[in-house]
Image 1 (cartoon, rainbow, N blue to C red):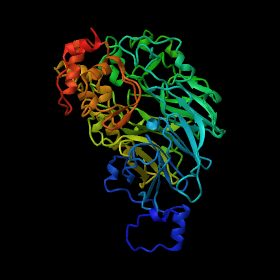
Image 2 (image 1 turned 30 degrees about the vertical axis):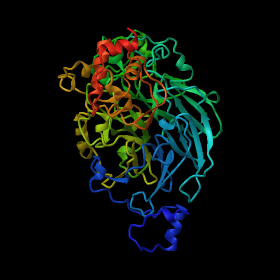
Image 3 (image 1 turned 120 degrees about the horizontal axis):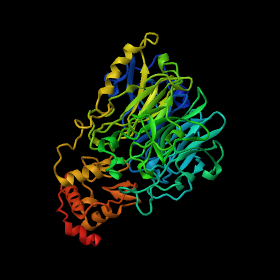
Image 4 (image 1 turned 60 degrees about the horizontal axis):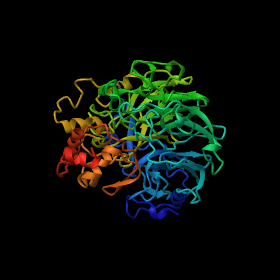
Length: 587
């Protein structure tokens, strides 16, 4: 059935009937007793001594999460069904045992807000995968790479959504037929999103927060019942702002998640939080989630340096007040702010040394909003585990994805680690969200002799700029910036659009070469002053995120920053004057 897609590396090579049968049946795809060799350059990655890495595929599309079947077939959820991708999900098969994908096939044509699609899991012979507003499943057919064309809707997010910030639908499944799905929160701290979209300096939070009724938590559903909505599920845990990575731990039978902390402490409360505090706070939390867990959002955030839950400024906090934070659950580990933990995996295999058994790998996708400091994250860490809790310090396991250090702009990073999966032989697979590169990490060393000496080389990576805590003065990239427009841009615009004006490559559009920047002055002024919500096109690519109001800027400040973006990043448009701003805004 798939023979016409197989690429023979030696023209004229004769395949026996047995090998053809194996390729068609998908039994082992010519799996060998020995692991395939790693790439000479280890796929560009640094890993502990004894490990080897190979690149399975170079460019599958904007890859998110990944699942590997028992026969070695790989399934990857793409960020969106869009131009050039041919389908929202991609399937890969290695037919000759060299570890490289010979067959790459796209499938899945749904398009409901799928620009934020994320989750994919194999369970009981079904491939579960999600868009941002739904969870689907398709039957996997023995011997066939692509699943059954019949798609079954398992869960539909039936809320009304505008430019909702956190609506990805990762999934986790327990051993009792339950499916866990997060419903992310639409704000930093439950600000008034009607009168002040995205929040502006000093905006108070709403208490009690109405978002907690249907968002900011994890809901439990049946894994097999079709056409469910949130009303069919039950609230399992709350106070969780945004979850992209979540996993059931088969060793201790508990749910775990990695939680994105809030943003914009300095932008919204510059008199209370410095730019440095806003870059490293609040923590990204690695949490054990049980029935009734409450992590405190939107009222509290976790400060990993203090080791405490702190009161959010929207509710009277100032970076020093704890309030009633001690009442809320602490994370197992509080990682530095904005590292973007996007997947977590508990290692169950036997290929790796015993050090890794039952421990947790976490993929840090990397920050976008640490300005004026370098971006951070962009690596995969490992957390040793014993009896349901960390048994040692977290370690750098795989690094080198970005290909550069320090990382000034998101676009400077060559790759961004995203999804994690364990293969049937115990290999670890990692996806990249920029081009869809896929790595396979294998252990080839002495398992019994593995220990501190082999880990020593990776420990040095904690000193690199994209992992260590930045120095408040020496690492400040704006310390010598004198131009007013650039200073305003670096404070309010770089978290989304980056210092080079290229955006983050997915959520936030570029300003470089943008018709929204170099076109109508009136439209540009209104976008900055009034905000923008809903789908737009920039340079032919779709975007659908929230541009908050910046009406707190004075007319002179707005004119300066808009002139700056119209004359930089390769743009060459005329300046915007104070009178232009006043004329459009009527003041």
